[in-house]
Image (cartoon, rainbow, N blue to C red; front, top):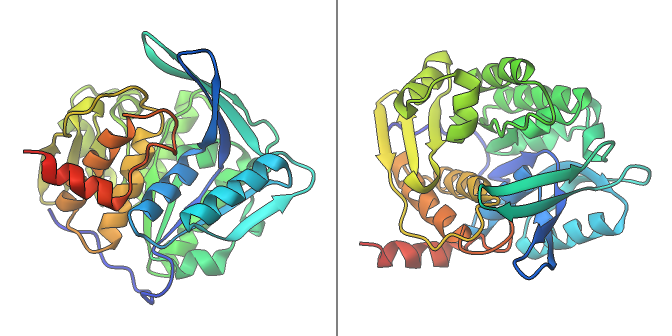
Length: 316
């Protein structure tokens, strides 16, 4: 596979800066308890990349509340840079709840008017975004408000103008915006990104296509530089100008898929930015994601680099 272009930046600066909404997670357990944890797709990506050894920063707004304090503590523990995190005295940190049933997991959100939804182009840390090797954001980052969407567009322009890479995961959430609006915005963003990271279910709704190869080809044709289409328990389909490649995951004793796609994104980006080929990065990332589904919550089960390498070594 052909690797994406190497961004022009000082190697001492951040590898990755993640723009979007971090959240507090309450995850329903089999015994009826709620497991307190952390979520928000781009924050999950930041933690996943940091656990693989990447230099990562968050660009966001959170409340000046106890939930925001806990997120700051999480990022400090994980080694995620918080210089671009703004605290809001008036708006809260978002929270969500995860329940599990026979059809998988479901989510309920309490994020209306959150501090992150008040992001705008004027609140962006443009200098830090331009200095990072890669910017990552998502469809959720765009959908939480009109001003946040404008912030994402402006951040992507800043990253591109500085010669950095732009990574994008559509993370379609139809509770946040209607499909037609989402499709227009997401496809425009996909056409302009260097690394496109869709999940199969989202991509199927967005394109109307069922065949994974046709979905990957669609996004390559509209302009995405590199496509990693995650396929759940079937692994990932990697697409670039040099062709398509399916990569299966190792076996996993899955209990909770919350955040597995984010884990894949963070691990994949960390390895790409470390110099791996897209194929090597994808093989690493499907292993990381397989490990992550073996525990509950979006953050807690994300493996470290050592755990991923150990699982890879043990996989035939």
